[in-house]
Each structure stands twice: as structure tokens, then as C-alpha cells.
Length: 129
Image (tube, rainbow, N blue to C red; front, side, top):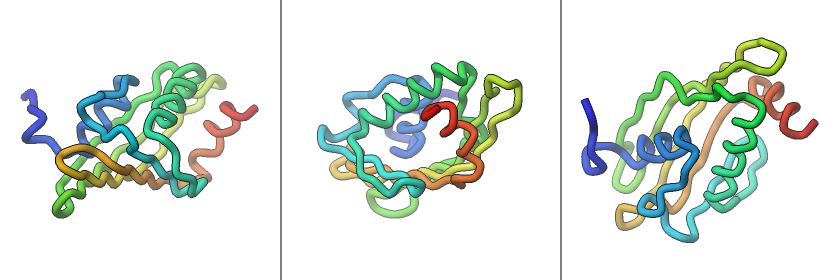
């Protein structure tokens, strides 16, 4: 079944855009920000797409699997998913994560991603090493 923009949460649409690796200009406000619990820094959404591009450079089969999403309140939606892929050494990458998306006038203004830094460490080492 194919969902339309109107029957899918902003969180689901954001994960779709991340999986595609292409920002959707109709999805986010121009000044939308992204925040991650592991570094607690606000970034432009475009920086999140750049990060995914870098990840795909070292983990070509990087995916957002086991996706679940729901509307959490007026202008707030949540996606739970598992980041998966195969690291260059052949080991499996598996990071359960949660994305909270805040909207204004139907456009994403902020995303907050929560995941376990210990599970992220092998991927982070590839990106910084």
C-alpha cells in the first residue's frame, strides 16, 4: 500500500527522505534544525543529509529498518527504527533509534534523534578515523 503525504506522519516522511538520501524541499522549513543526543549540537537539516551521505560511503547497505511511526500530539510525530548495514569488516551494524519531529504549518522545523552511543561507536570510528 502506498501512503500519501497527508496520511503519513512528518516523522515517517523524514525517514523516507533520509533513506533516499535526498532532502525534500517541500518537507522542511528553510531554517529547520537537527539535534542528536550523542553530541547535543543543533545543526541544519542539510548537515544530517551530508552525514548520511558520508555513512553510505563506508556502509553502502545502510538502511532504516523496522520503521514504526505515530502522531504524538499536535505538530509532533515520532518514528522508531533500526539503523542497519554491514560494516567494512563484515560485522553487522544494528542501532535502534528514535526520531522526534516537530512541525510548524505542516513543515518540519526541528528533528531530535536519540540512539545509544555505544552502538553507534563502530560507525562513528569509521567516519572520524
